Image (cartoon, rainbow over all chains, first blue to last red; front, side, top):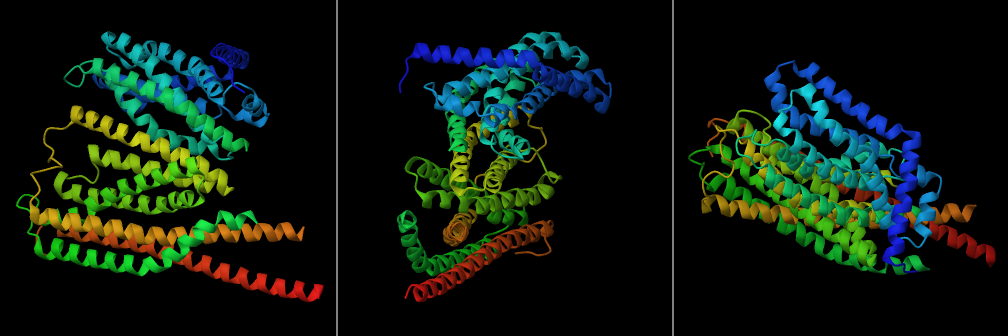
Length: 230
Length: 244
Length: 59
């Protein structure tokens, strides 16, 4: 059965509003992500020593590592409840393409983990003596990059949805995919810290990575989910 | 019975493999003999690296083959997922451990080369980092096969992992090169060094061919075992079904 | 090849690690091929036995 773009859009919106209200009602995911983020940021100076210059130098990279780990932590159960209670199968049988459902669920994950963290990061950056000139580029890079992180994490979650030891496998599968996002995310947030200011170019490449993830992950995730349902 | 039809092609493969296998082994051994003779006995020591340059004859072919095997795996996965060809799925699965071994060897010998040249066992050099990511891709792919029991489901999921990983490889290479060029320490010996002299290049290419043929030889045997293992699985499933 | 050259230990170890890893890989693959072939023969024999017995039963 083929459906028009209008209906597809409304199905997309329906999944988003359902999952968003679920996330807000439970409140667990957003809290976990921010709590974990804060933990990493507080542990870093305690582990590395309070040297202000050192902290300033590593601040963008450290914030990115914290972002990446928090997103990964909240992602491995992305499809689990819907898979276990069978609602994923109903969504797959409906006329809406599973790719649209996947995209909606990844967007909700971004709205409830990547986006709040990207907004919180510059504020928490004060704890790491983040250069104030970097607050805006860091925020922009994180809002953009975390979208790719959510998409890739949702792919990892879809690949391991039917497995008992899924959580362990997600990190191994997603880590290689996170390498480019990490590199260009940090470069886009570091300004001229490493000598030449490449942050503009890095941001453009980061956007390209997000677009590539946007094209590849919905199809790959939907294909993986379908093979688990068969 | 549909299973006979499903394995009609693998049966033809088994016959082909049995005839080709001894020849592949002979070519492999000959290439290794020539490559090692040229590399160890004929090629001169490098004026800058000394005898250490001889590590290249096992390091570079391992890195080449690791990339080649991943390409084979990804192409087989695409054929498997598009045409639903069981032999392609099996070929992809059988390639992974061999490729992972090559990848590990590229890292280990690279590290052994780096210790005298750089002074440390591990440097986050662009090439080593890319190879390390490739090893992680191999391990993830193998882990997926280990985690899923049903071979048909495992082959589809693993194929998705292989294809996404294959798209990822050039992006990782690009980003790691960029990253390394920005953070490059000043006093590091350049990896690519001076232009390669033909007395070094010839054994290098022959060793590369030798590694490719070794892969072919081991891959053919692995595919044969995997076809056999699936037949065993089917027969045993049919028997337990018949008993009930 | 000059065995007294500096760093020769690294050269020898890299060839050694290559031989060990590739050897272990080959042995593992041979062992698997052998065990699969053995099990297949076993199943074949059992199947032949069963066919013979069921043939007698129906006859």
